[in-house]
Amino acid sequence: MRNRIPAALLTLAVGLSPLGLTAVDTKTALKIDQEIEKHNLEIIKIRRFIHMNPELSNREYETSKLVAAKLSSLDLEVKTGVARTGVVALLRGGQPGPTVAIRADMDALPIQETTSVPFKSLNPGLMHACGHDIHTSIALGVAMVLSNIKDKIKGNVKFIFQPAEEGAPQDEEGGAALMIKEGVLDDPTVGAIFGLHVWPEDVGQVNFSTGDIMAGADWFEITIKGKGAHGARPQEGIDAIVLAAEIITTLQSVISRSIDPVDPAVLTIGKIEGGTRSNIIAEKVTLEGTVRALSETNRKKIPQLMESVVKGITQSFGATSTFDYRPTLPSVYNHPEFGQTMLPTLIGILGKDKVLPLQPQMVAEDFSFYAQKIPGFFFFLGVKSPSQTTTAALHSPNFNPDERSIAVGIKLMCHLLLDSLDKQSPLEPPPASF
Image (tube, rainbow, N blue to C red; front, side, top):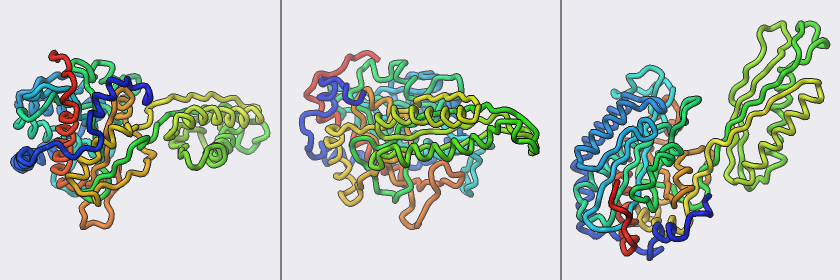
């Protein structure tokens, strides 16, 4: 998909001045800073409220109500109930031009928070441990700022508040794929999309690179069916647990010996279920895990190798097996031309020493679905206090990002959106309906 973006759409996104300087004039830049300062306390209060009230994927009912209410108060055109609990808003600029989008995710994780902050989660077993409360607050802050300078905007900005980035519940659709299916990139047509993710680096620093920056993520389940017997008479059974151990060990050689080491991939088995009691040979074991890969070549090759391993081991011992492999997320791809077009904006705001190359990460993000359809620009935003040596990792019950990162994220996104529109402004504007 990444190589099939229509040429006209790529021209729309890349604009006419690939390496031009930031297009926001000094007066507008000062106004952006003033608006961020004016709304900073309100935005932090919103973030803390969202943090205290986390909701799981496709269940972001109160979060979406808050987001929709705030966007409506800014006189934006607001749609609710998109992809179940998603919210989409359109800000029409004062000057004609195309449309670009900013996406934020809203869902939390099933993690019990252990931080000591006064605004810790009030919902037992749920926590914003991946920073989606920060993402949502940044996007709302951008809406607050840009709605007060709409006369300077050469086109439209679409705000996408997405549910279920962490994955929809079983047997439900959700996330970016469903947002796209329900037309979030249409009416008016979105020419390019921006997104960010919090990252445990210093506040005031971002990491960005073009190309594949986050891995594709797939799910698999292996079921091994042996033969039960008394634990004291193993010769009368086929031990599914022993076969499972052999399969787990051998599967690691798929990555270490069958995959090019300069094209990273990860195979992790994170769940094992099997056996009934200590003195019974297990008849059945189920393994569940994930495969992460940056290239489509590996995403196609690895499941074939895995299936061969599973069949070979089980059949050689007279057991049977099933292998269920499901592609889940493609890799996140920053389009090279679009990335080089907008990189000067990051450098112009933060300074060259604060915009660091991003090494490809094996974590996954469903922003990838948007970037398959239109050019995307996705970067990592530092949220670690510079005074700290280390900080808790994403998905940790102790994760506690520095809230000063919110203002940094708002400023960067405001400039990226305005610069992108300015570089596209000579092009024909999109349809007026929403």
